[in-house]
Image: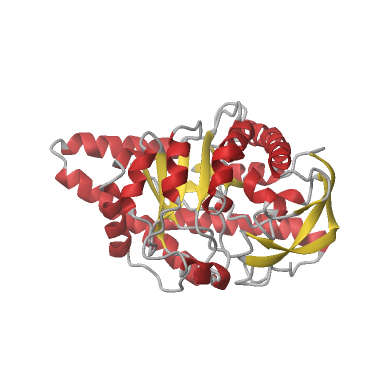
Length: 373
């Protein structure tokens, strides 16, 4: 009950990459980079476990960017042919690679990263991959020249990758789709179908993350233009509620999202952002507990996973660590309160204990067993 998790990324150590920076350049020589990235994953896992996070990630420590880290190992994408494009409906400019031929995956992209993380934690493991619509919006296309066709090509590639990750012991595959908050007509026309193709046949839990972006200036300035209420979710949530995706991750903390919109996700697990990643101010556990209780007016506790609004890679590491601790402690406060208030306190305590135990079950048959360091 109230299993905590994070949206995905954590700040990288200063010895690995330039801190507090998106697309941060690596600070380690190429011949030592893979080992340094693995070391950073161990730190990220330890930070989450120490903070009491129940469903952990690798912190995206092996990727410079949540989209390009997946694309750089695929065929048909030319990173030498970069152009400056406006992305997320021209919200900001970015240097993006170009699709010059059929998109193909000739070898696993993130399999070794999942195996490494799986071998070093006994908690439930989540891994993030960019969703098809967001990928399409974060590159230039000289081959398909049709956004739905290109999205379905990436959905096929994602599905190939995801099947191998699930077989390696992955518990949750999360597709990151911030573009769903921008191109709502496309979500209905082909975005949901692209998610279905990307997750077809998976044995692990599937999730989609839809937020208002990293806590960077371009996103903060854009949010100021959205008015007193942010109702983008009102168009996408009914579509997701009818979809085959298991979990939906969304932004709540310090946002103008009307919380009653969460009721549109009945039947889905909801990863509600109760940690604001757009500020260095650290929430107290009581702040987090209050936000969780607000969300529980619209989402039953058994369906609620307290989470961060988005990735925390642009934050200072100590700020991110403090926010993780607040998240873990705040959720424990609410669990304890639910146990005290329940008419059948023993049943609530037992259910909470069983839920937490299930979060720490070892990987299934065929997956590497935990060897936590």
